[in-house]
Amino acid sequence: MTKRVFEVEYAGHPVRYSFLFPGTRFHFRDYIRAAGGEEYDIRISPELVELGRKELPEDSSDSYVEYRIMISETARELLRYGCCIFHSAAFIFRGYAWLLTAPSGVGKTTQFLNWQRLHPGEVEMITGDMPVLEPRDDGSIMIHSTSWCGKENYGKKGLCAPLAGVVLLEQGEKNELSPLPARDAIFPFFRQFMVQPETEEQCRSLSDLMDCLLSTVPLCKLINLGDDESTEMIRETFNKRIVELDGGADGTL
Image 1 (cartoon, one colour):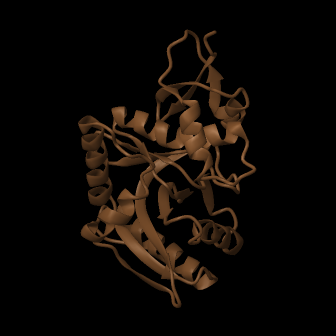
Image 2 (cartoon, rainbow, N blue to C red):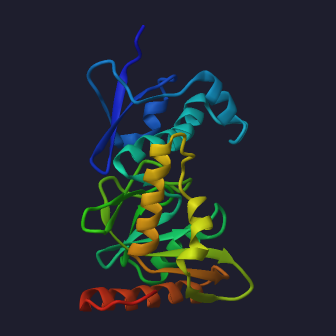
């Protein structure tokens, strides 16, 4: 019996899923719609579900395990269009998208919550965990929401904005923000793309996207305590960047 096919659109590109478990589609919330026909792009095998289960809490449901595995499979599918999923908190500030990237638990959400508390209404979360990066023909990168919003479920369907800067977060015993040279960003950023390329074409697509990310927008590193001062440092830096963008001047974060 053929399983029903569902579709989710990422940066204008539809990806068609056939699920093992009926409950999986509900984890996609209002992003998903039924698709006609029987053809699909992604179907997870039972064996892959069992492997994925080992990386998640023991009480994770079958449908949640399948949903989480869909991240890397979807990221790989999106490489066909030059797009990919990037592990980061993505939010809009003054019309531009900004990424805070770091391994889980380093403080991306903390910075967003600090900002909301200190300056209510200034920022809007695109997604708290897994945005899609889409390079454009004009050299810019657009940031799009997904249903993978993190455990806090921060994000909103349909939000997107042009990327203006990326901050690599590190925990430390002081607050120190500095420019991040592209050569120093390659390895930590590569690990934040939620994909392991399997073909030469996929490797080339990811390499092109990485090159675009490293060369299009300013990058910086923030060693931080997760306190109000560190958040104000980010906000001040972003405001300076916006002045440069609006004035047409070149600059760095």
